[in-house]
Length: 438
Image (cartoon, rainbow, N blue to C red; front, side, top):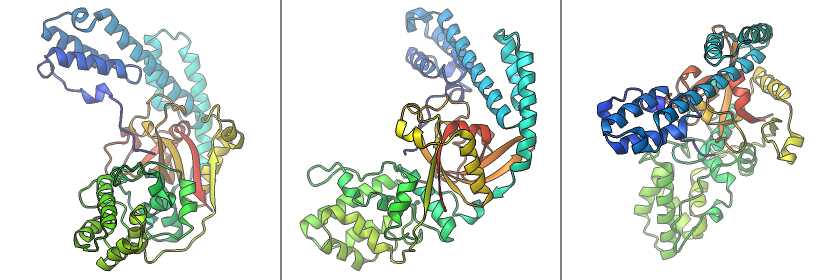
C-alpha cells in the first residue's frame, strides 16, 4: 500500500499565479494539460481565466496555440462546476444518512439555482428532515472515545509502502502496552522476503518495499514474537530515506558475504543507521553465518533480542458494495449497516482498528468516489470517536503513518500531530475493510 501522491489539483497549485508568472507559450500549454487532467475532479474556473490571460500574453489565439477555442474552455469550466454540484449533492445525501445537513444546504441551493434544479426546495426539505432524525440517533450512540494517548505518536513510513505494518504495530502496541516496531512486522510479513527481490548480477535491485495486508502481517509477526521499537526503529533513520538506505545496506552486506571479507567496520557503520542496537560482533556473525539472501533478516534477528510473544486473534471485516465483481470477497462481506455497527462496537470497547481506506480522500474529501479500479489503497489506524456539535455529525479519529505533519489531510479534517478527524459519511464511503485484534 504505497503512499498516494496527489493528482494535479490546479485551483490549489495555482491560487495566486499572475500573468507575469505564466507568459510563455509553453507555460500556457502545460497549464492547459493540467486543466484537462483535473476539470472532472475539481473546479477550474480560476485556472481557465489564468490560461486565457497566458495565451493572450503569448501573442496567439487559443485556437492557434491549443487547438481549441475559448468556447471549449468555457465548456470545461461549466462541466467542472456541474461535477462539483454532483459532489455537493452526494455530500448532502450521505450526511443526511448519518446526521445534520446544515453545512451543505446553502451550497446545494446555490448550485441548484445555477443549473436549474427546479424542485430543489422540496428535495432539500426532505434531506433536512432525514438528517435531523439521524442526528438525534447519532447524538445518543456516538460517545467519546480516544485511545491515541495510549499509543506511540504518529510515525512516518517514509519511502516504503509499509502502511499495513505501521497500523499493525499500532494495534499490537495498544494491546501489549509496549511500543512495537513496524519495520520488524514488515520484514516478518515477507519472511522469505528476499526471494521477492528482483535481483540482477551480484544483486543490485532494491529490497521489497511494497504493500501488504494488516491481518496477514499480524499473523506472520506472531510466529517469532514482536520486536520493540527501541530495538528496531521504524523511522528517522540517517539520511531520511528508508528505502534508499535499506537498499544500500542490503547490497553492501551481500557483497561482503560473497567476498568472504570479515573486515566489518565499514559495514557495521552502515548497519547502525538502520539497526542502531546492533553491535560489531553481531554484524560479523551475520556475515559469517548467513547466506547473502538472508543478510537483512540476519541483522533483524540479531537486533531484536527481547521479543514479546503473543498470538493475537485477528478479525477482518469487509464491506459489501466496494469489491463489486469479486464474488469470493462479496460473499463473505457485510452490509454497510453491519460494518458501521462492528466499528462502533470495537471503539466502544476501547479497541482500536486498522482501516482500509482510499488515500485520495485524505487529501481531498470531495475527490471522485472510490471504486476498486480508482482507489489508492492505504491502511490507517482508527483510534477515537466523537460527536461534533458544530456539524451535527459523528466523527472518527484516524492515526496516519505520514509523520506528525498536517499538510496532507483535507483542511476540514481538523488535523493535529499526524492524526485527524473524519466524519462518519466520509469514512463509510471511502473505506472497505477493518481489522482488529480480539
